[in-house]
Image (tube, rainbow, N blue to C red; front, top):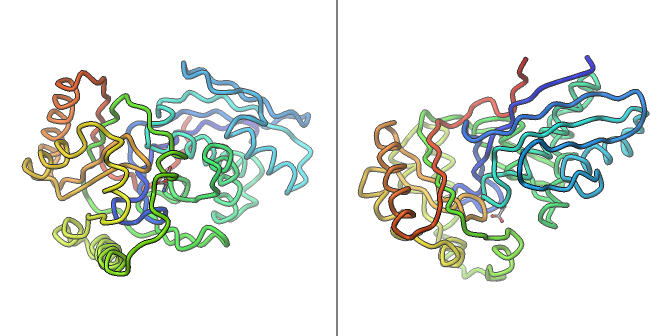
Length: 306
Ligand code: HSE
């Protein structure tokens, strides 16, 4: 096989209480990627989207992943990648992870599936390192494994695929800039024991709720006493969106990744769509352009397409 086309989904990192460890893939939005194995050793990156992302392989998230694969696997071939990005950069919906995961996943298929999923994650993390300065596997893991994943450790890579509860996700991306590096910088470096205890309870409750399909337990566990109180001030309308979502009937939700996107989980599609309408109207009132997505949790993650 010399050529592959991929549909690479957006992802919601942290899932409220699981900072850097709990993440899920969704169906919308998604990037389209085409990857071709080259006879020579060049790494060529092309973007067909309007975001002005760098195409020099050394500066491109997909490019560095492929350069590292070439180096560590001692490959003679190069790759050509065409990326059509629909996941807006800086949205908090895993835009850079999609390019990085898509590159590692697609290249591995073209090479005859020589890598384990953990090794694919290992290479994709080079892209996250370029994008945010941190080698983290959240966002990448659910892209590659699908569904909801627990990053038990990113060094060494130890990913635990959980399951895919039958829930709807509403995500809103308000057009304000929140850089991941800034959103990490403002976090407190120390956590009080009483807060850590609450957070452990919520993380354990959320994982149990996911594995047992216990939606009420999932709802009771979607609380973050450590990161959200600090980061939410960067997102206009956050409190209003959250309060109104709960009034409409969301199980719960919070900041998607480092923001500015906000996500909510609902049992019924109608609830998820009512929340989407409310989110849009909150940001219309604030005169902030926004994009809203409703989808289910995506059990498959990256998909090859014809
Ligand atoms: N877990 C990371 C954070 C995700 O919240 O900073 C950023 O993409």
